[in-house]
Length: 407
Ligand SMILES: Cc1cc2nc3c(=O)[nH]c(=O)nc-3n(C[C@H](O)[C@H](O)[C@H](O)COP(=O)(O)OP(=O)(O)OC[C@H]3O[C@@H](n4cnc5c(N)ncnc54)[C@H](O)[C@@H]3O)c2cc1C
Image (tube, rainbow, N blue to C red):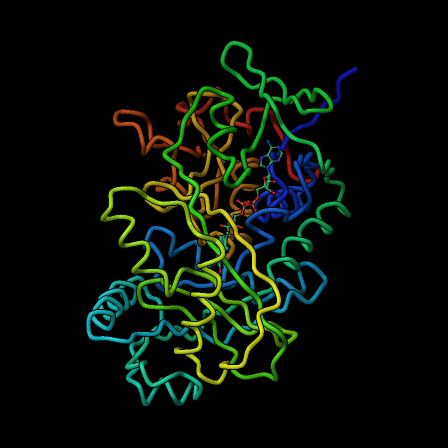
């Protein structure tokens, strides 16, 4: 006999686990299916940067709310998640980069975000370890960083305690539709009957969408990262680069995390000029990051790198995620395509998806993230309001299933 679930969430990364948690908190026990381990992909390999600055402005309301949530996440999850809110410095080494950052700062100030441009002497007051090449930076004091493993694990544990089910080492291989609606999820182990499925499969989000006949303009973007041996505490800010060449931070236990592709620009440029994207040279990029970081932070010149890894980013053509329902496939919910900066908005996305699933009414509008944006003429409504006027999604509205809070 096949199992049943009120909702199946595909993917046990931060998005799947956070959504399962906020649903469980309201009484709805999701079934999360994860093909490897909890946090086994991007949510376990990322830099832990939690930022509002240098974001796509459409994501800003989510990023601001997420910062508010991170401030008390340790209480919500009942565990320390190593959240450090000491700002984000985005470093500039020449006038062109200063110009890029100054424009970005002006745009972001207009959304109400508090951030500013600093000259070299002001940067040194905040971080005395920057190298001679730094001539300025943007600084957003309310940004910060967190331990991504602990956040993902915390959501998972709490969701499980509240009754959510997690099947790990089990892959979704098919989604069954009848008359165009979701009726079951099939894994490499079993069939699960459900009429609601959320695609939180990260880089596999496109493949999962293809299972129901939908497609996404999503491409995997390679990203390499490394961790050093431990240092005494040096600086608490999240560090970035004006053009996003690298990013990093000192972790709670003293190691430095660095990621990006700094030092490989010439190589990537030559490949582009030669007309082929070029497979990244993994053995080349890690050492390039390490060498370049020493220029930015000479104090780290004798650092030993103890581990390197590669991660894949679910890169959307417009660099913002796909969230919500689509009238094309009733019962299918998008929550994927976070394009390299999703971890920072993980908590708020989990909350909004739970609100969508329970009430059809996310507390922050998500229409900028609709699947319909890729299809001219398609509807751009990916949530629906809980009222009689809501017809567009009435056929798929989970609220019509009369889930009540605290059932
Ligand atoms: C190197 C690197 C550094 C990054 N740094 C930052 C940063 O500093 N700040 C920031 O905000 N963001 C950062 N990001 C991006 C961030 O990690 C992601 O946006 C975020 O973790 C996405 O979470 P997710 O739950 O959508 O995806 P994931 O964490 O990838 O979870 C998706 C899960 O779905 C599972 N899955 C896939 N297919 C199936 C299937 N068929 N059946 C069952 N399960 C399946 C996968 O195994 C995976 O565990 C970084 C990413 C990388 C790779």
